[in-house]
Image (cartoon, rainbow, N blue to C red):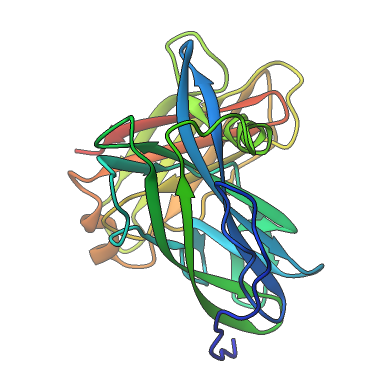
Length: 269
């Protein structure tokens, strides 16, 4: 896949709590913000909104067989105690190198912002690096700035709430979808994980993605259709070394369907 450099470009005036749009070519990015009701308490949230031209896509935290995950550098921000970035549900895309995982058209990454001093403004400074791909893959980097006042108000809360609704929730023991048995066959020349997923009856567009903060996990392949609410997937590692590398590593299993989504963290022995 061919690559070329991408840079930040034009910007337009922004409302309070926003950054101007920034970018050039086939995408543009901005920061938005607003108070989101979380557990009955108004909470400061930002959102990284990436808008792409038709036919272009960007990548999830596990990009799949090609591409690079997005990178969020908030180190220049002020009056920040913590910043947590969340990823909405991704989709699979076929490309020349296999299967990519990511987004097309428009995506908003919700960002929970906890200030050091709640009665003071938060100054957000983000360097956002992301890949943009069609037939050509373009690495992009933009610098975004926004001030979130102490009396922020609703602002772009609805846009952020819609993105939060697409973030997988932690799976419970009785919720669907949820993880079933995971069988690790990590010895030999073709190590695998076989995963059983439990979905709601009649669910469609069922899928599984697996991520690790330490290693790249191959894209799972469905071993058959959904049957009686169950579906099996296989994760095949190209080499014995890559299979051995996941031992003792925490993995996140993301289950998606038209009837809901969930995430489960577990460590393979």
